[in-house]
Image: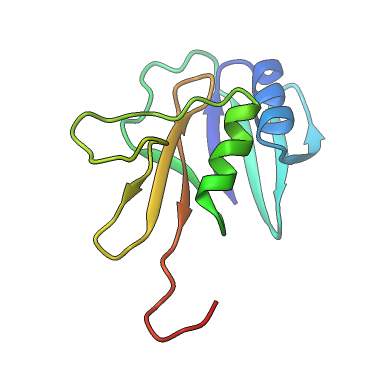
Length: 125
């Protein structure tokens, strides 16, 4: 089970449920629970977030990062640019091993990411 803290459950429901398309299977005054294809994400009301973590708190592995970025951008997600990181025009950084990563923020400033892992050499997709 993964956890993420949010300050406003209504806003979190709109973002995680509507914008990201996660299936929310439980709601209470304290948390939302999302199904992550066999895993669970508990989106917990924590009151005021004093400081957003300066690192990725949640990430998703995707098969095609370009199409995932296009889909989320159409839903209003803005991808984060970091001046110290070499990113392409979509905001994608390519790691030395070939994985492609893009970051975005939830409404509370939590850093989320998408990763498309490189195919190991010699393997056919």
